[in-house]
Image (tube, rainbow, N blue to C red):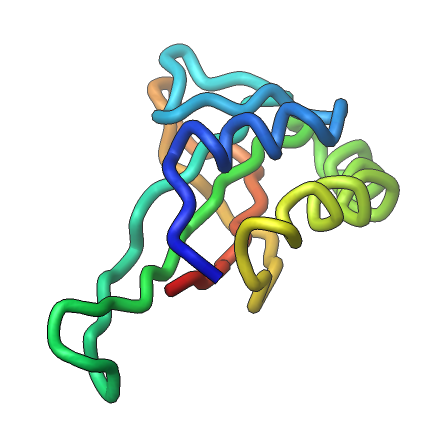
Length: 114
């Protein structure tokens, strides 16, 4: 699996039809936003010059707790399915994201490629 570009990940997120993927975090950040961020480049146990890239992919669901939970249950299979051709999804978890106007419900997908 080769390392995808930010735009390829953003396009895959948008293809899920439940979020709008962008290369970088949109400001203002609202429900339906999704973007990748490089979390790490790791060359451990790889030949010189090769790196395994870990991505943090953020999704913003509706902002009340019940709607966010229902959104997560209903939409995560489509989002993960759209990412699988590009990256190996390792973990999906709800998080609290610091935004322009305080804390937001968000979903963090940790995914890897090399």
